[in-house]
Image 1 (spheres, helix red, strand yellow):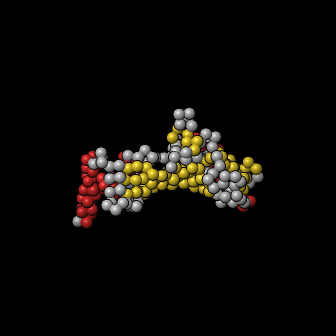
Image 2: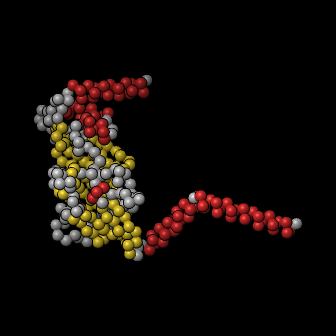
Image 3: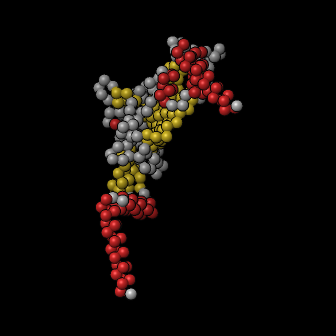
Length: 276
């Protein structure tokens, strides 16, 4: 009985939101206020991204539609359709930097006026950018440019912001991009300069913010990390193991392995005949 009621309630909510979207679309108004994109760069060159979109609802229809959407909508395309905001999208080029583990979250309306006809809302979505492979990824990683030193370079072309009439990507107005790098990063270089460091970058700095409007033409962020000797040795043996397993499971490896097995069997058979 409870499951039947639950299913019926969900269907009624879905019908309500469709009707509200169709009948009240001319009265629903959502206006973008500000967007923050947070990029946490991981040691493997992958990244965890969090986009927070702050917007203003200017009618009661907007507020009602938003409240219903919180209960019934759980994907990016659905939220983009409900709010009519093109800002709801990936800001990384998924063909160059594939993503996974996409999650969405919307908070209840807040900072409303006295008669509850206008409110602010916050829509947040997170996703993981996979580590670089085959010359693709958000951050290019080069191991051992010097002994135990790993180089990281942000690829601006893997970002997916708007493009100007000059063909240059740019971070739009009322938008900030906050990039956090591993705490043990050294030799950090960033251009244009971040909000936090207009001159010299402090030692140990690991967070950098670009504020729109800002062109990404020639943008650069690079840093290095130094592995411990133990990590280098462990990674070396891991790489050797992976390479060996890949070779053993290849056609050539399986053929050689089969030949070796036959030779061992033949050897023991000969030894057995000698004994007998």
